[in-house]
Image (cartoon, rainbow, N blue to C red; front, top):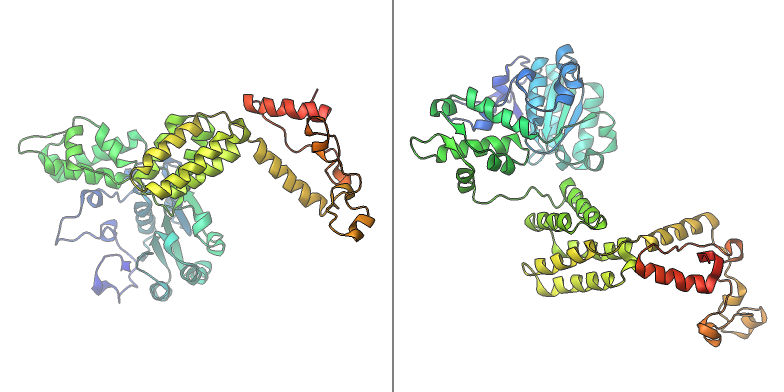
Length: 449
């Protein structure tokens, strides 16, 4: 838990309400903070990005201008300014400022902050990674937020609709922050080169941008860390930062992929939609993102089995066979060789003709069952294993298909109330046209003459 400064002696004295932004930034004369911390802006005028929130007339700008702060949740990817905005807004109203990390704080710490906020006449509480708070921890905030004892600012990289309880969510406004665009990332670097004494004295220049921007992933904190590390790696007398230098400084980069978080769902969604859109290039790219992020290969294979039936179906029945074989092979082969098997299946599925006719059919059938209830099975297709059932006409009038020409005879198999209803309509692929021709020959106008 932190109040104003990361200073143990400050903890019992949390009633003081005035501070400046430098105090919140946890500066210390005992060490030099990282470049990302040194460059943290203290005013909205110096804040880069999120124009939809902080430009004049926009909602967060107005809160700062009018000194009327409300509880909120800032949702966005890492390194886009969530913590900085919380600090700037708290400073704008001269509020006592507490910080908690959801990783190492619990109900006890929350209650301590609430009590000290009550004694101080109110405070701003910033909770980083609030999505990691469990229900009881989030519940402990409700009363204090409701009564205005604390103004809560939560920061999360995950969708608050899934991770924050509805009672707390209803008491907070959610603001969505975006990953920084290329021009904004360049502005972050330019600002650092102009304002940071160490970089300015070293005369650092950016010769090539691609590696810096690409490895940052839209994360300003990561970008500034890369800049600082690269500058420190320059041979004496050199000033230019190149792609090669950045790559040499950062040998490997872990993909931003949280198997339990929203990024997981976003990437698997992109993966499925790329296959559905018949783009094997994009599909294998998203496969690589999952592989590099450490996704369970069995999870990927299971999704392809589902996809092969839902999105390909009878347009290419071999797709389900290959996907099922892929799932079995992944279990047998293991990592990393199974990535090749996954890639084969992904490119095949993406390159296959598509239909969702079976998926539509089962959806419509289930909807029909919901609407019509438990309609009775027609007598002629009921099972009749006993004499009593036969006497009740179970099975009477049933026509055994194999006793007729082409193993078919027209008869009704639907309940009387929905007789003649068509649920399955083959798509337009070559394989499905063959199915349609077969059904048309048997059922006539139901499938068109």
